[in-house]
Length: 279
Image 1 (cartoon, rainbow, N blue to C red):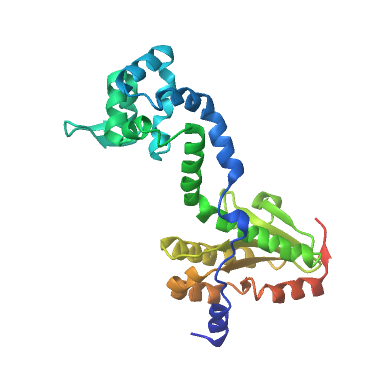
Image 2: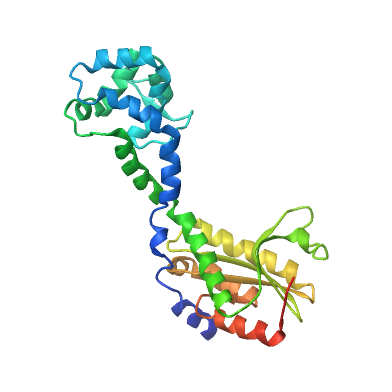
């Protein structure tokens, strides 16, 4: 392991999470608004001792209201979601919502029946809001990448560097190494010397994705760097790289411009010296 790469590893940050990373309330409110009318109608079941009859009454009034029952057990609506019924058969979850009898079975078997009777839930809109907050944690991994883009953008802004975001390779027709494939770069910066095509990401945890990313960028870099006026830049960070440091080291030896949030200052110094050009 080279001394430069060892230093790169020691610079990897523990987190890039800002407070808006944890929950995307805007998306949650949007999800709730789509089903709030049906949830409010389902509130009719809360506090009913005779749930079976209440389900029948509501079904006769509006059978479509039960289409949102899956979210009450924290399941995203998917037509192919399956479960095992009382007869030991594998059935589609949505098959329970076809009749009052099967809906009542669903409510009882999931445990929602007692929750409704005992009024442990007082309003299903508020209840599902809480469920959506919990489910939204699954999206944090994607927001980690978005946060990295925001962090890099802030650094570039503070250094007064002009850049473009989400740039397709078609903007640079002379770079033909991608064939017919469409490639989108997170950032592009142009100086009097070169055009820099930049990818950024952040990994808190390990996994095969890290190896795939390192391999992919090791393949992309030579395709761009073969052109004198272009250079590929990869800015990555996160403790997850310690679990894939061998593959990262291979990329480190292939990609001349590989930075993290600490060493990016060297890149900024370089492009400032070259002179920033507006696209």
